[in-house]
Structures are given as C-alpha cells and as structure tokens.
Length: 283
Image 1: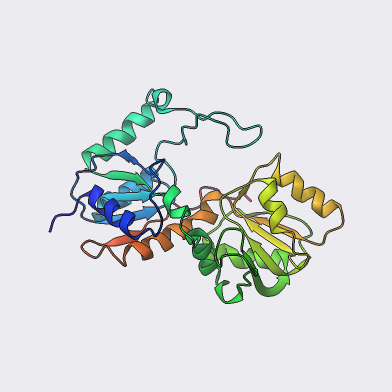
Image 2: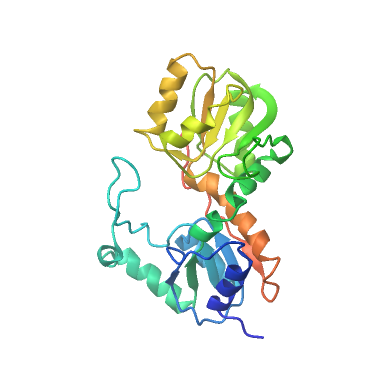
C-alpha cells in the first residue's frame, strides 16, 4: 500500500501522545504527496545526509534542525541574540539553489520534527544521549518531577577524572573535539546531562544539587551559560563541564526517534543517519 510523506506525519501525529503543535514542524523541502520508500532521521539534513539517504532509498528525511541553515527567527531566542536570516534572503545563496535542486532531482522530502518531539512527556533527546553514553542504569530521577524530563537529568557515573571521563565519551559519541571547563584532574561521579542549546537559568537549575560535580551539555551560550559556569568554578565549587557541541549532544535523540517511529511505521525501512560531529581538533 502506497504511503506518502504526509501519511507518515499523520501516523506520527496519532502516536505522539500530546496535542499536535502546528508550528515549526513543517515540510521544509519536497512534496508532502511524495511516495515514501524509506525514512531517515538525523540532526540536520546536510548535503552528506541527503546523499546517503538518496543512495539508500530513504527519501523522507526527518530532521531536528532545518536544512537551510537558519531557524528563520522573527524574535530573539536569548538575551543578546539576533533575528535569524529568513528564506527570502537565503534563496539568493547559490548553495541554496544547489541543495534545492538535489532534493528535487532525487524526489526527497525534508520534514522538520522537533517541536512536537520535544513536547512529549519523555525527553527522547535525553534518553538517546544517556543510552549512547551507557549511563541509563545510573539514572537518579528527582522526586516530584516527571522521570526522563529535560530538567530531571542526574546520573551516577563511574568515578573518574574529568579528563578520563571526556576521553571515554569520545568513541561512544564519535565526538572529535569536546571542550571542558574546570580542573582536568577533578574526580567526578554525579553528572547533570543536558543537550542542545543552554542558557544560564537552565544551567543554574542543573547545579542546584550539591552532589552534582559534572555538567555535560551541548551548546552553552558563550556570553551567558559559559561565563556563569566559569564563575561557579571560580567561586570554589568543585565541578567540571564537558561541552559536546550541539550536534553531538542532540544526534543520539535522532536515533531514539527512529526507534520510536519503527514501532508504528512498518511498511518501509526507518533508519538513523547521523550528520556527524562537524568539528575536528587539529594537533
């Protein structure tokens, strides 16, 4: 039986477990009427992801981030933030045209799935990242808060130094260039795990528990959450931070999304296609 891209989205809507938010989860490129031969999930639809999807017959790509390099914001996302470029500006870039032509030629469909995925009671991004690290058995949910929600994110981990901990993460997450704040020799054993974009208020909540001696995060704003944590260390708190980068911290959630979608989309293959850590450390 033929299934279209919008048909897959309808199944996702029926299974999401909450009222569907008609906001930013939209068809970004391609036709919603396209027959789906396979579904790929990824952090973002880079040219590399699009090529791999086309080569393997996965012509519906569900992504956390938009394929054309902008949230197309009309308002500031954080203090000091700027309004993002809109498509009317981006279409002037030759790369926009090349990417659009590739999508059209290969009959691909790129659909964003972030807002509604994040609205679920269980934070699939947190689950995916914890599982990728092998930390799920050490989960310590806070009383009175929904388990596996974004702000209920503490884990007991194998005691080790900050340096040993970050080195152990690299192969698990295929992370090439993590950064740290704090003493590399500090021994850590209780981690607050955060993914994606990080502002100072969320970071403040994450370190409320004095037992937390490690924060693992994606992308702390470097003039807000970053200096907040530096000040925390300078104040005498024995704590370290591991900064994975946004893609590395969010990508395991795309694998979790693929596993979830496979429970109700069985007509076509559903696979995770990671975009990969975009950064390298030059030695």
